[in-house]
Length: 442
Image (cartoon, rainbow, N blue to C red; front, side, top):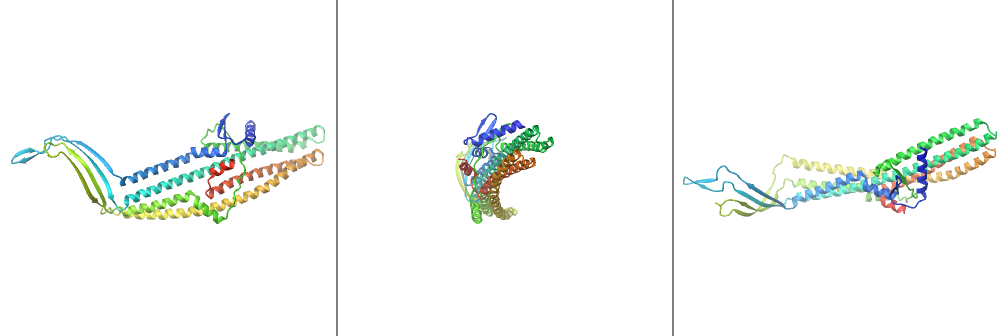
């Protein structure tokens, strides 16, 4: 475990000072920057692929809905085998009227000329549903990107916590070495070593736990990127991005203009209205044209082939109330979708306000944690010097190291909470996270 942690610390130290690098695989380790990871997750995420499949099926529905507006071409070929030759009686004599086993074939073209807008409404409705599915794909892409960014920062935070735990182990080890030296000189008794040894053992346990948490965070990120879980992932930190906090009303307006989830419901509402129009015209007459060419093998006929054209109308006068039921069903669906949209807007407004408040809170916490960290580090040096000079107790030094560890933990926790809060806020107002973090990384 300690070898694993040491390797993580080495990767972290190298990636922290290295220039931005594209995704690469070296020595059983995936090196991933945040922009490369976003590209990978947008390309390989299974959730996105599922939504794209639904979108593609929706596009095929538009082709199906378009078909009634286009000509329908059909062809038929038939060979008839009769027991008797078709004939008729004329003055008591049987006269053949057709061949015994004739061959016939024909070609016909059917075209709907007018159906009171039923077909065009169905086609437009399917087009709106397709647009809604495209908006759903964009929504999933944004959600997957946010999840990746959050997981990426989680992994970075676990690496910082490993570094904090390792630093505490180093500090306690160095302090314990000083105490061993004083014990050998007879300045202190053996019992004075016990608190430091207990603290050191506790620090090593924390280091092991921090390493385990990193492995879990690494597995989460690897699963999102569909990478092999048997390989390590090395990530590179980025500068903290603190967006400007606009007025809450302006943020709500921006979110409602940008969020694809709202467009999804808008397109669904349009589709519902168009489907209702189609249902209203369902039992109205359909005017059509039908033309074609037929041939029937019959040497007794003057013309064995013929061309024709038909103009006609057809209507379903009574369907048992099915059309009326479908109309009412569509109207109720329209009401449902409108309420879902209103609920979504309420949820988005709450999300924007919550993320804005969390971002402000994270900014303030980081400022406080930064000041405490500087003071805690100086405090450790101060008490180590005093202890070596015999004017401070071991308890003072151990307490100073504990405060330093807590201050470092609070600082890095606040730093990455700020980064996550920033991502959530930008997501809530509909910003493009992929473009944002590509720009930030550069």
